[in-house]
Length: 142
Image (cartoon, rainbow, N blue to C red; front, side):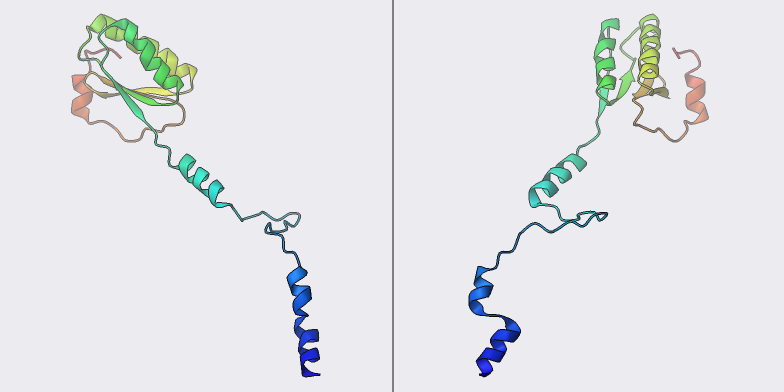
């Protein structure tokens, strides 16, 4: 008789074995499902850990500007060092890069005597250069 009381309270062993439990939680309307599979978590972590890259270029010819612009179109920032290029071609490259960064809603900024930083729109450059550096740049291409 005591065993019947326990079976009624806690359920019959045979019935418990036949029950089916779904592994997926039931999502109620208006509630967000916070359960994520391990595979999804790994994929999200990989996407979140993608590194932003900054490409460095030291162009020697005007034709090198094409590679620089392609990096900008890929969403990468580019640092361009004009020490290996004459002033006339350097001005042409800077003009081209001004147009390219404008087209992608980016920006171009002088960061050194003959060094420029070109960024796509998803980059923010903060800080200011020292006054001595600005004076040194007065006779270089803009």
